[in-house]
Length: 295
Ligand SMILES: [Zn+2]
Image 1: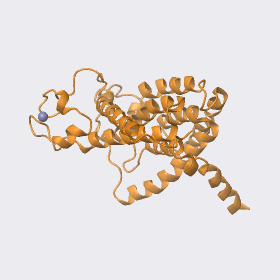
Image 2: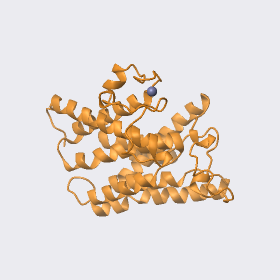
Image 3: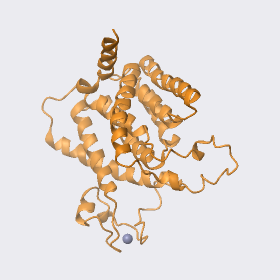
Image 4: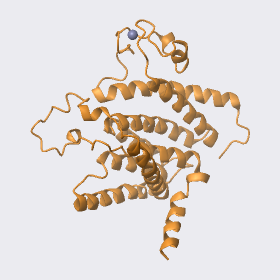
């Protein structure tokens, strides 16, 4: 249900709440790959190690007021911190415009936060962490018992696209000997299917694949994607089993010019949830298009 007169004050409020959540996501994205606690210690400047005071840690504003530099040593603060806070603020405001005060709002706000963190961790590390995915599964599974969204039966059917993806990936691997889809993507697709049901999950999969194809070609033409993973950024895990046969998730090194699929699944979810009239049935139209071109 869409509120006809969106209260602009509440819109600002949800943008602010989202920016604060984004600030926390920045900590998660920075610390989770190194297996550090996301609550302690307090945020420090990565260069001079000085703790960041609360007044220098205000989402969005501090970045602008400090002109993207540490107060103590002048080291540059990465633009990403601002971008993540802004994105989460915008997504929260958009969710409120879409759902208003409702169960769906309660369900999707934490999910969008989890998905944004997953997208960035996948871009950086080719990693969809179980510590985010499994709680998210419980969250959306429980959410299916609430009124408004998908039903529990629908949620179970929503695991279909993940199973489909596993089968296709298995056949692809048997035929080409290459891994086309990581298990992280499958887990992510399972969460998204649980949250949106069978049709939602299929729509997200098709939409993600379409956009990944377009953007993948652009990225390849402009020099490929860089990630920390290739240079052994995640120390500790990378050296854990030097004699392993390479089947461990941590051991896998992405091809030099590949891009992760997870961010596209996340992007497609944002689109399908926020703009169902534009993206909701895209996969149905896509299937129809294929059917028409065949016969
Ligand atoms: Zn500093």
